[in-house]
Image (cartoon, rainbow, N blue to C red):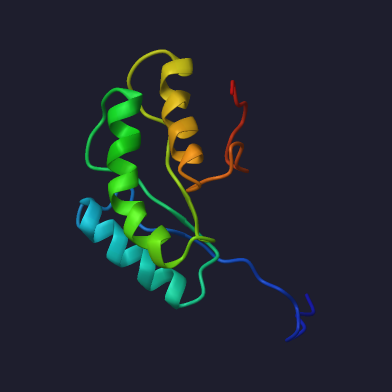
Length: 115
């Protein structure tokens, strides 16, 4: 493979997941996401510290994202779907995050979006 130095690269960072020592609380997520963007990430993905109703999960994601969006309104952040309830309920939280301009209404990770 021939890689040119002028080729564009998009860096997506998943800041947590199965690693329990990774950032989980909103202030930890905000600090880690901001650092990732400072270092050149284009997109940051994260999980939160609980499963619950879609609106509560969206509010928890936004707690960590709002400090980042306040200084980087162009930042692309996206959540997982919530693990509780019918699929329509789980996806509703993404719509709330999208309305806060945190994620596109339909992101590339969406297999099917009921919005």
